[in-house]
Length: 410
Ligand SMILES: Cc1ncc(COP(=O)(O)O)c(C=O)c1O
Image 1 (tube, helix red, strand yellow):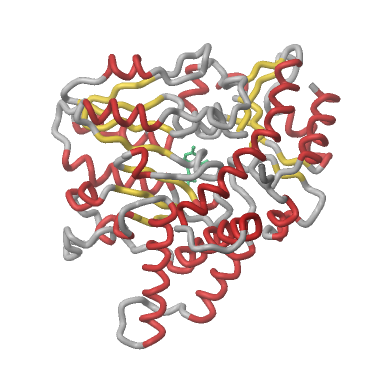
Image 2: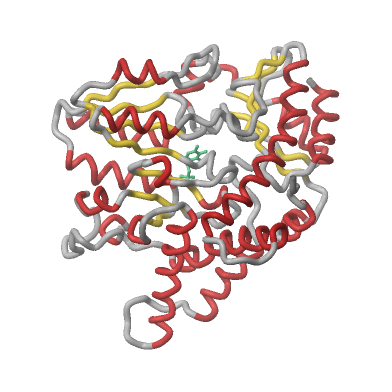
């Protein structure tokens, strides 16, 4: 069984070449050298407006289309026109809701999950003003899980959309997206899934899951401040455009990208896939496997490494008196990603990171914009949770250092 070679991995991240241990990766990961280089190369060699007949403009346009094509292949979309780029997940979902609400009628119903980041709640709740009925799918507050039977009770023939998270950025549990989506489709509704806390850790496969819309942020997947929304082609075609009136309904995804998208970041983001390809060939050699298949192997190495990182942390927190994990206590890679939250009886959540900072370890406290979850768990008044969020470039030595410090202060 192959293991992820951390020396190869870390060499791709210039910002890791120091003595800081970054455990705030769910907030934003470090950026790949390939990404920085591609952004620079775009700006220095092809930074002109797309769509003109001269050569540099043609090349610029090709790079942007190539970026859509590469991402489509990576996430197993059917074509590049299923990939919509945008500045952030928040903006992409806001725009999707702006468009989709025009398809809804007063009395239609939308369901949101209380464990989501506000990016996938607020835009849908805002539809209430237009007569759309919004229902909340709440987690079981003891088990911290989304229960499918609870969702079933909320579904009616008027349900048009269910917005939920693949992984909560607080709880770290991987929700059974395929099963949830299938049940929602049986009721004739669509899904909009926030994949932000999932995509840095496991491979996205939109066809396997049969999701309608799936959104994630590339600055948490080792790239730039930029984001990607997958939408099934037939849905994107039907959506009313939110761009200028003269941008045609068939101009997908442009009709959903008002102000267009950032060209250098589109091209820069392909450096992420370059990196994964390099990790593949350095571990498995060169061959002609399709990209998505190579990514499967890479993410399987990542998942196994992450499991070995999170296991001692969960074990430590579980064994500690006065510490409560906010999320499941499993470290099983098929059930959780290494995003771990907790509260302490002894210390306020806001206090813990300030005691850890001097050791050059970056962790964080707060509600992480999952405000409704914090409210429902009664944690808002306590300042939310302390969150430790790891990714595959973290090492066992870093985890050891963190546990030593936590052992002293908790
Ligand atoms: C789970 C989750 N969803 C959505 C977002 C919002 O992403 P963006 O900053 O790209 O709008 C975040 C950001 O922290 C997040 O953690």
